[in-house]
Image (cartoon, rainbow, N blue to C red; front, side, top):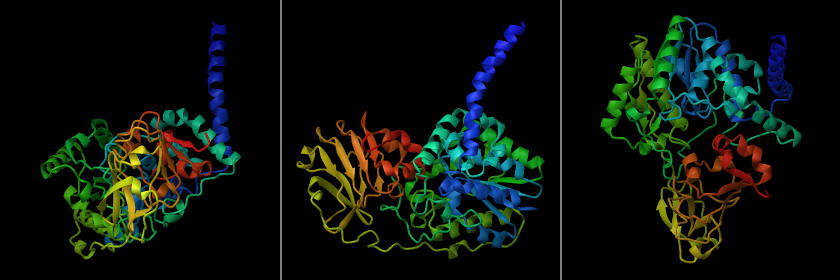
Length: 476
């Protein structure tokens, strides 16, 4: 019997030792993600832990980072505000779990995830969470016991990635708005965002369907348990909504009514907002169907403030109508894009601010390699439409060059051309947001190729970090 026990102990030690070593390496190695978008978690968490007394904690994804003016909400409510929304790819559960130890008596917690299947679920991205935890690994104690198994499972992969950045001296240092430097002391994105940056004013690959199918039973149960926990600690919990681009909504008014009614019935705590109030004109949005521009953030903040004042029993009301929508200049994207030699290969149609590729000319169908033109007849080529390369039985490579103006690909943009094997991308990752469904529908064997020196930038980019399984580096 003693030999059996010793054998079991040896086996356990053999299993545990590699993980202990990995954890030690991870903790000892210098932080590599502090300049990334996810690196902001340390500051958001520190603010949550440090604000004393009664506070308002607003929890969600990146629509919260882009869609809240915390100072304005403080002005309306008279309470300190913690913007505890960062990035949907981490998962709503991750942010709720991290908040638990710091919710106290008199607090108001508002939960408003993006209206999407992923954020309305118990989805948890452990790899992205490690990136967010990396800058202050003491936060690991607040990650939640139920998540430790998932974090442990991806620790080898994360450690290898982190050590790879250290070994090659390629620490991620993103430029543009998707960087830690874009946040203010409240955790709001503070970079000026005057206009909608989407050529057609919405992302067609990110349709928003407000139906009862969105209500994940396990997620609803988790929300009710979280609210009950906060209630025991003396806090009030409410549910509200992310901003929703009206142009991206595909569900009917009847669908929305049923969704709203069913949500109110299933949650054991109040829904304080009307979902229809948060379906906003596309002019208020920035670069996704959930991210607001500066004016949009003011409007959304005032809407939320009005809802909160009502449930707080306050009689004053917020004049939301004063936050009028910004008007994007008609020539915003038109920078005199003259046709180049690649323009002859494409069929295009006009969209807001420029052109979208819709197909190939007969000459285009005979090419094995095609480069996306920057412009045609003075108009920028801003998008690639569904089945844009269909009809070719020889095309193997599509190049999106360094100076390409294309900013969006529809869901079926890379479908319909079975010979396509390579999408070479030379623009910055933040300049080309791509939905995962677009990449899922590429032909079998097709991959996205990027310069080797751009790998760390793509791997930590807001839009691309969760899609790196589709990416290879040039030269491989």
